[in-house]
Image 1 (cartoon, rainbow, N blue to C red):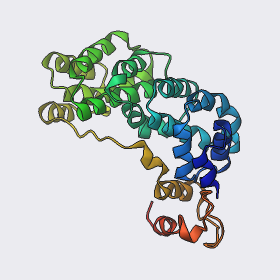
Image 2 (cartoon, rainbow, N blue to C red; image 1 turned 135 degrees about the vertical axis):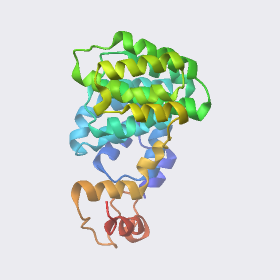
Image 3 (cartoon, rainbow, N blue to C red; image 1 turned 30 degrees about the vertical axis):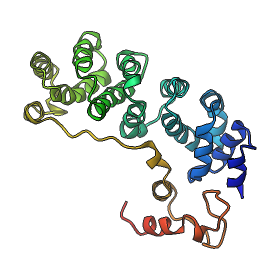
Image 4 (tube, rainbow, N blue to C red; image 1 turned 90 degrees about the vertical axis):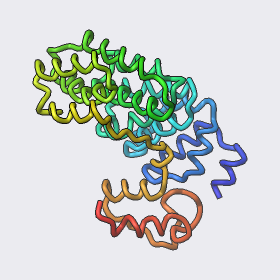
Length: 273
């Protein structure tokens, strides 16, 4: 069984990453756990993405950003920054990146804030970084004053000629309103009116958020690697899984499908996605 090899640490990190890529979408959690333990993974992942992403049908890049977030080290943070600056992550930016950045915690608050201010990043990456700071603030009860100051700074550095950036700032207004800072709120209302943000967020919504706050959730990056989620993504992207339940499981665990991911696939197969 491959899992025994992972546990003994016989495979080099590069071999583990190549195994991850070969499995494409549905991967074994034990393989991921072993990669997370490897200190050289953050160095190797960016070096191998161009080669292994093609082999993995695009899933090596996606799995990698979750792995780097789980590691929560300085090296993994820098690797994640390199990746999100270089590659287009599509919907993963708006759906998941803020959770991945927030998982690094308050220790990385200032580093994440630098992403928000850095116009070399995709505007939606900057928005994800901004949202991550609010998750950290809610979870750890730290950083509110820094968020207020950062929000004020954003109005000084935005490019009003960049339509995408302007849309992103309009989305940020609701988060700014939730800080319940009177001076910042007055800036938010003026900006929203002058830049015609009301098609994105309404004045009524901002007033409601200013008075009562907004829902902010944190998501564990390990959820990505749950068999139910990976099989859900498989169904969305590839349709039905053509695998007999007595064949080796698609995840590469070495067990038969029936005794591994079969129950999760039965749930996903008949679910309304």
